[in-house]
Image (tube, rainbow, N blue to C red; front, side, top):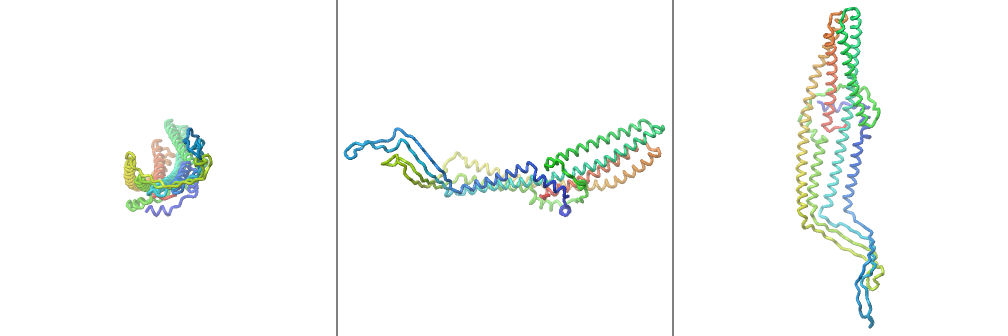
Length: 421
């Protein structure tokens, strides 16, 4: 079973180092780590609603005219002013929610759920990054090994050109024969240029992922000997449904949507709070200009009565989002099953093709040996020689490609199972 092979196969040390570099330097991971920290701060902000709110207040107000009255005092008329023109009030105020019928608790749960979503997104990005680095790593190995095969083709073509040049000088070959081999050499050299270009692009991608301007790749990148076997679909699916990162993220979104419904249910509930203040102000008879210490305290009950159906509409939207999140989980599970089925078919197909190519490579090499013997004897046409050389080239490159594809299948299976590199 592939599961056992996954557990038994070790990751090359240089690949592990590249993955660690990517986890340290990749900009997207840094962005999500900062978003996660911000989310944790939002949780603290939500919890702060349980703490009192203390403020310092200072008010100055000039008022004119002010209330005055003329009253007899000790037999004489006196003008009494009930409010100063210069009003001063300085105090320390405190506000504290006493009971909000679960509104703050729901807000905290919303913030915690958002942190969980951010953390799951970070895990998913880190996992995908690791597998992307591994795919590029083995892709570089594949291209380097393909270049070795292509160099062999170029060497053979150059040797053939020398042979046909000598035969042409001796009158044993035609100019057409030499031109055919020269065209074949140029074609092989162009294919090598394409391979080198792809190799440089892969190295540039690896530099972007890891932040290393010159990432070192060991010969282990070209070792495509993973013995991957088709797996049992139902058993793997059952495991993947509990460990796959995309499915877990979809499930976390359902829990967050459920909390949103709870929060919207509680958003229209009353709020009971305490308010108090202590400080100095003027305006007290008989010396209305003098500052006097004063204290005020009380409770405030706020009961929403009508808000234009805002709370009911918010609740309706939250429940629709919850339904959508549940369908997203179903879709994630369906996509997971599809991916596993397709992967199983690819593994089976690549294995069968690889087995056929092992025989094809042996046969092509044998045919080329015979063609080369006939070439030295002068009893073979350029077309026959080119056909034999092309057969070896195509067989070896195809075998290398399917070995590489099986390595990618191996990585994809681990990714679908939610395993970390």
